[in-house]
Length: 140
Image 1 (cartoon, rainbow, N blue to C red):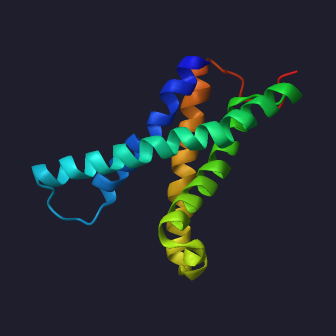
Image 2: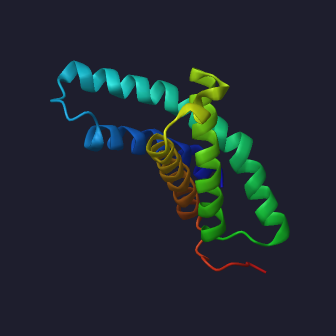
């Protein structure tokens, strides 16, 4: 489990960077732009991802384990939920609490989708790395 808690939060910055490169502004990326993007994403997203894992993921993992609902599906579903929550909290902390309420519908859907992909990716990788092979609803 230690290996999974150590490695899986690194998936979020990697997914975000991949998404930024694939679906970004459409500009021609220069070497300096790529290096700057890499540095910003990994120096900001990595600590945020580890913090979200400790604050949300660890208690959720313990709760699932205690009540016998630990499965890849329950971990990934929780990861999606907590990924959205963490992503919206992160952006709200940068732009103010009213930021989320000032977004248009398409912007909010975009942010929620990104958070869901990041959180779900971290949780799915955690389940894979930790060897949780059951995708059924209940483990008891």
